[in-house]
Length: 533
Image 1 (cartoon, rainbow, N blue to C red):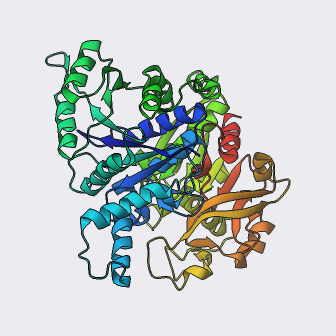
Image 2 (image 1 turned 135 degrees about the horizontal axis):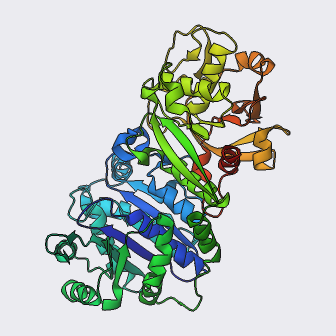
Image 3 (image 1 turned 45 degrees about the vertical axis):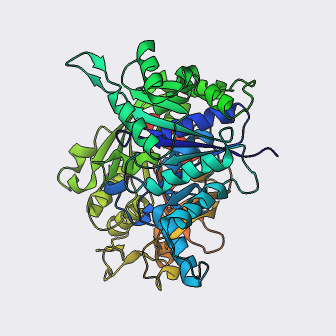
C-alpha cells in the first residue's frame, strides 16, 4: 500500500474561524474522489478530555462509539464523512503529558532529562501516526486547535515542522486558515492580519503550502495575488472561503475554488476521479427548498451557547432536509419555565425536545415541560436527562409518588425513580468514568421506536451515571409508560414511551451523536414527521 499522506490545518488571527469545517469539507471532497480519509483534532488544553468541562466553556462534549469524550469538531467529521471516529481521533495536551509522565515514572527514559523536545514532540508525532496505523487510510487530516502564536500550541506546531522535514514535501502539507476582515470605513478587505499570521508561522519554521482566507465577501484576483506574493504561496493555492448560509455548502465552495485539486497535486496524488457529490447536492437542494415548516422548542440549561447542543441542532438539519421541512428551533431556558408561565412559553410549538445535562439547575423546568407535552399531546423527545425528567414527572403526577426524583438531585428522595447505576457507586473520579460509548438495545415490536428504526436490535452511544430504577417499572407500565427498549445484558431501560400519545419518547442514550448528512437518525426523522402531522 502507498505511503500515508498527512495534511495539517492550522489557524491564525482569531479562533472560531472554522478549521473544523474546512477540515471536514476537504476530507469529504477527497473521500468523494475515492480516497480513504480520516480527520483528527489536536487540542492544546491540559484537560485529559473535555468530559469534565462545563458546556459554557467548550460547547458540547461529543462521544465516540468506542467511548471517548471528545471535542465537538469530531461530530462535524462524522456528520460529513459518515465514518465513525475513535479514541485516536482526539488528542489533548493533557493526554500527551500524562503519557510522557507515566513513561518517566516507569523508568522508560531512565538517565535522561525529559524535555518538550524530543519527548513531548515525539509523543505528539506518535499520536498523529497512530490514527493511520496499519495504513488504513490514504490521507490523514489533522486539525490543530487554537491559533498560531498561542503558547499552548507551540509543541504541536513544532511537531508538524519535524514531520514535514521527516516525511518530505510530497507526503505532508500545511493549510493555514486566516481572516481577511473588511473595513467599512475605507471600503477595503485587509490582508495585513494574514501576512502577520503567516509571518508568525514562518518564525516556527513552517512555510504554509495553501492559504484559506475566511471572508464575508468575495476577494478579487489582485488581493489574492498580493497575499500569494507576500506569503510565499502559489497564486492558485490561495483559496477564498466566503460566508455561506449553511456549513454543508462549504465542500461545494471549496471544490469550486480548487482546494481538493491543489491538495492532491501537492501530495502527488491523482485527481482524475471527479468528486461524486450528487447525494450531497440533493441534500442541499432539499435543505434550501423546504415544502413545510415547523417550530420545535429545545428546552435546556445551556441555551445561551447553542454549541452546547450542536449535535441536536445538526440532527434537526439532517432530518428536516430528509422530510423537506424547515425546522425553526426555539431555544428555551429551563430555568425560565414555571407552573404559571409554561402554557405561554410552550404553546405554539409543534414539538418539544428536552435536552441532556447534569446537575439540579433548571431541572424543575424540564419536569414541567414533560408534563405540558404529555397533557397536551404535543410530540415530545427526551434525551438522557430529558428522559429522566419525563420519568420523574410521570411518577409525581400519574403514579402520585409525591416528591419522586433522581438521586442525582435529591439523594434522600422517598421515591428514587432515577438512581445511580450499580457499577457507578464505587467510583469517585469524575473524568472518563461514566457509562460511555456504544451499547446494545433491543426494541419491542409494535412500539413507535420500532416503527422509527424498522428493526429490534440497535447500538447507541451513552454518557450517563444514573438510570431508570427497575423497582418502579411495573407501576409505570401498568399506567401507560412503557419500557420499549432495554439493554440485553444489563436489563437497563434504554427507551421509555407513552402508550396513548401522538409521539412521546424518552431515550437514555444520545441519538444525536449518530446522525449524519447521508444517514439522518431514525428517531429524529420520526419525531419531525410527528411534529409535521
